[in-house]
Length: 184
View (cartoon, one colour):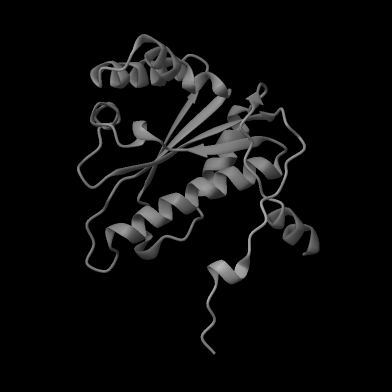
């Protein structure tokens, strides 16, 4: 149990990623783990879009089109096009909202967020690095349309996975007193 606690206590994101990324069978295992996330009502309100190889270029083209539609300059458009190439695997995690009388939208969004986090944690346990990114492209209308999202659906984030190129990670100091209140 101590090893699990140490693992969780040392969780980190990795912004510099390279090949290799998780294999197809490892990606399947990561997604199976993600589907074990808390899920009130068994709604399975998540959808995963896995991009590897040329699939990352398709996402880059979508990002570039969104930047173009927002009148970005050429440098910003090219940066947007290259964003998915920052890692060998990109998994877009989406909340596909399911109308339910007892499971509100926020709870379904939380479930999809837990799914994304589970993937990142499991990838770290497999020896890979990862970083969860959102940004403007998670909310952009053109991007949302490219993923066929309905009004209540949400892009929770883009999870970039690969081999961590910065194995030494500093840890942020968190003052629990600033974040925690106890009611005894």
